[in-house]
Image 1: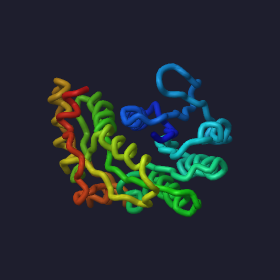
Image 2: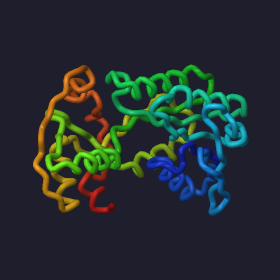
Image 3: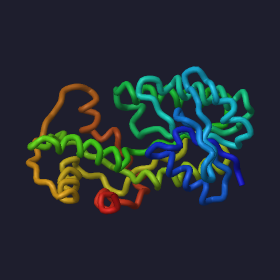
Image 4: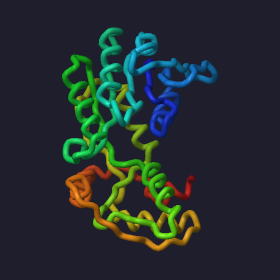
Length: 249
């Protein structure tokens, strides 16, 4: 049995990581920005990722940290706080979830993820990085917002390879229980499909009727999406399709 800390353990991905670790019989602690709780099998420690308050307590005595917490405006700083605490408290393994295409798409959040990867690799702490494609949850959330309009805008020429968050979580839990492995193989969903196809699937599943409105945007980021720089065709290891995800919501 391993003792493992999960940052962001109440979020879309982290809560599934916690469940997989508990199912494997491991001792799990969750680091959260929210009020701590001791109910159930998981202990929650309140942390301040900016100031570092609570992190040393959360990391102390852990065999590994699965770092799922994220900050769109300060991803590198957040990762730096976690890595520094791991170094101070002698935790020898930090597992980090990143995104396919962080080294290819000029998006500020992606730059932050890539900087966090590099920080981890240079930290002197044992590390593992898993990059995944976008989660089904994210695609569905985007479509839910777009479907509020009578015309549902879809990015022309863009394909997506959504993956099921619990499957990514299972892989992260497995990696956390092993030795530091550096950058491991990417993890993509089972299908690469035009965004418009996923929009139609979402409309069918939710019983809505909307006309699709294709659009194009200028710039290197949108061009990168059209070129598929966010896809992992050689690593389509997920098994849950978008329709199956929608049917289970």
